[in-house]
Length: 104
Image (cartoon, rainbow, N blue to C red; front, side, top):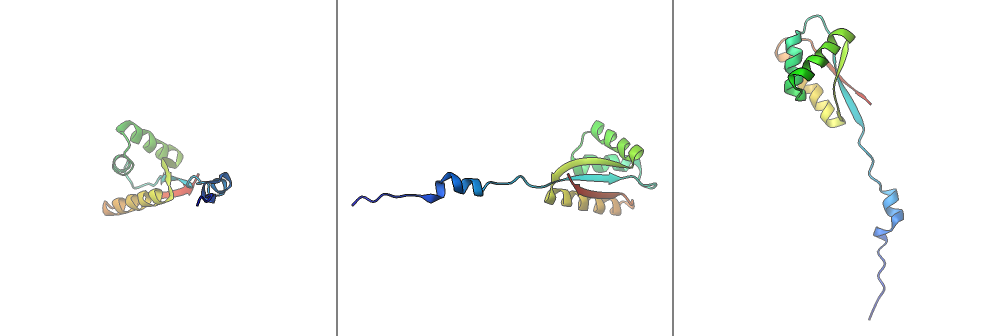
């Protein structure tokens, strides 16, 4: 009683159709305003985005000089969480710091 078994789940055609796509990526941006201190922006970059002191200063200067600065590039869920964290932290400290995300 031998029966030939064919398993269609391992055929190359099925793998090609079920390829995993890379997740969409979003850049998180900080926007310049006239009220948020540079020290607070550096604090946010270090605390929320795990940037070093030097990286935080460089990003903060981009925000100050160019109007926006890229904090990082993340998947949608992570980017959204970081935007919310920045908003909550800045409102708690009394700053109007704006943080947004846009698709790369």
